[in-house]
Image (cartoon, rainbow, N blue to C red; front, top):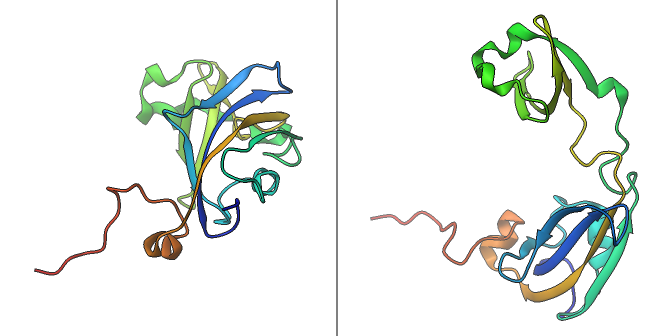
Length: 169
């Protein structure tokens, strides 16, 4: 089998910033691999393109530019917000580097990272955590299998003991 749409793919990889010797950002090893439905539209398109056509056991190594990954970091996504907007979260949330989720007036959730704060304002970076980064992946395709009917319907990987249909008594 090869990596292609409607297959469940299992990979082990290291993700580093910038290149093969860069800072380790994430590791998915054989004990805790990354399993996904190929072609779901939920992963970075460039990530899937680099894996497409590989066979089980085949190693891979590639680099994604910020434009191929999570895009550039935009200055306009760094906002100063009134400190009172954080009262419901408690004072211990105001820690540099803390990730938070805030809901806007339309009810949409936005993830951000706290950069700094004063008595009146909190500066939050709402760029994706990997925005502006060049991402280097190196790993191996561990397993490829056809998606089950449930996975085809959901267009996502389901653990063996995971989601099941409702049974009527």
